Length: 334
Image (cartoon, rainbow, N blue to C red):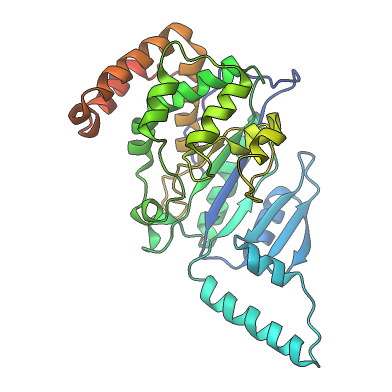
């Protein structure tokens, strides 16, 4: 089944270099073997498979870059790149340890399909790929209690201007409760803290209508309150791209990869459900950018959100989500 819901347009079509913007997509799932998933992706997109290890395949031939299909477990991937000497005790122990780790990991660790940064007009190909994976038996977040799986978007920033970056962050914080409700975040993902909300004090600081910091101050404030990748909108890859030294002075997390993108980690992956697709998370993200691009609407939204946060019962019992849907979501044109 191919999803027919159209993907909405972002307000900024070009990146900081004046080229069409791109977006990477990461989809976590199980229900298929690594070979099955990588062959399906290769067949769908006309790519060639390269085995970089026993748990990671690289698919070449796409002009946008390589696709990756892998088991999302760094230690097992490192072990899978080794060749053991089978006639030695150390080799036999290594193979046994890897087999045990694989047995324990497979029920819990997702298989991940990672796209290269794709031009936005190619995101429809991801929808088609999702449909093929579903037909082949891919399973997602709500299939079992232990499937703490997500789909992550990496929309390329349209500008390095700290004012525009701050505007998108403000818009995201204002719409977070609405996004969270729309995403229907699975209990296991909440428990495992993969995409935590931002601290209240930080939210209040950023949505202040006078908060328009320099790049250095924006990154400093973020690092002081969020020295972790586990945020619904992870800015550490973007900030490392903008100022690597400043970020590395605050965290030594080796998994932070510098890239000029927003790293949106909130959505579940419900790939086994027939009405689920990229369009849900993407179209909700577009609402963030559209609010950020409308200066007057953004300022009014920030003021309204601050007012709501001063009345915790209204905030926690859903009044703000109602206000968002009534006042701060753009019309439904593409």
